[in-house]
Image (cartoon, rainbow, N blue to C red; front, side, top):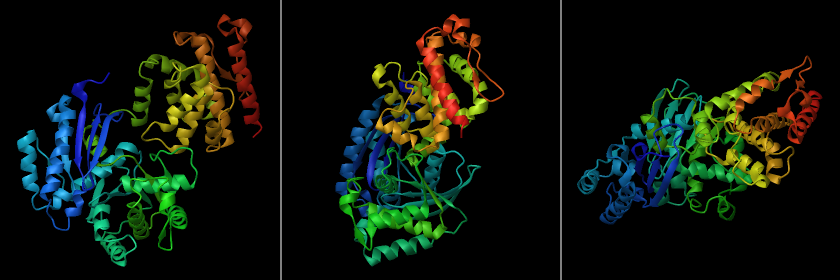
Length: 484
């Protein structure tokens, strides 16, 4: 259960919207327990460099609500910061004083560099082995940083080309707007990089368009990777062809950002050309997660496995997970499933046991597919989801499962089936109560990498149709696997 003392609340006063996010704890495994935004478009005032009285009044109304919701959060765990709109506004000191007086809380107005650094940290929070350019396209500005695998962040530039600013400047097809975007991006220092990490809701909306276009079953943005040139060409052909924008089709992916998306597309297209980007990684995280990252003890365990353990929660004990993993491990010498994925499948082996038997396989599949895992490749997500599906099913039965199975090789699909069925056999040997039973039912491989299963007649724990069905399913999958 979440302790109130662990709650971390972040109020982000952006140039487009004001958002409150409350995390249940300052860890990589943090869950979002509340998330709401109110659009105010403070960035429309950037050109005048002054936040008008009516906007200030609206801002204070939003803050009253957010502070009231956050009253259970310890004061030193409640953070409020602002970005480009207040950074540029001449009356930002007045706004800061109003916040301080009414709420007894400081509002931190981020410098351009701080905003860029937090955006980069947000990518560290959700991705492993980060190396490339991070671009955070917001309402008031675009922050560009360079990051490497040593987690070194180099701030490159902050440009006043946020979508709120651009929309006030003119239509997305206006030559003035196009020229402004191009000339602004040309000012950025050129660095060698092949990978671009796209941060911000407008860039995520572009990913949604591509997912729609490619008819992807998995609609989540986190861990979505694309070839940069293919991505731009695909979107241009379908949505932005010859200055004609297909708003009807765009609205199917994102109605709320429908008129913002063209600006985001032209910004991203220019960034790809500027840096000669080859690959784009999209992420759900940004400066809020980056700020949370700054609070976290970086010596914590693998962020992905931390999330897995949190999902498993009381369904299985750590000592039992290790016993289950050790039981399957000898077989994995042949299967060669990534140990991180194998261990995760052991943690999640009971994920659907409280669900009606007819729905367990789909529940397990969807739980892995749609959970916002960090530091996880999309391919591994598909593999893990299918292992858990086969934990509750011997065959592919639903359309979704069949579609997901096409996302990995047939070779890996067979491995997923074998691993899932092994988990199922373990369930019937242990009863979810005594994992010590596995010690007396050791699995081995023969010289041809076939699994040597103990005979039911030699051990009473193996009596019953469940064990026999599982062994039969595994042997059939192994036979097919060996024929490839």
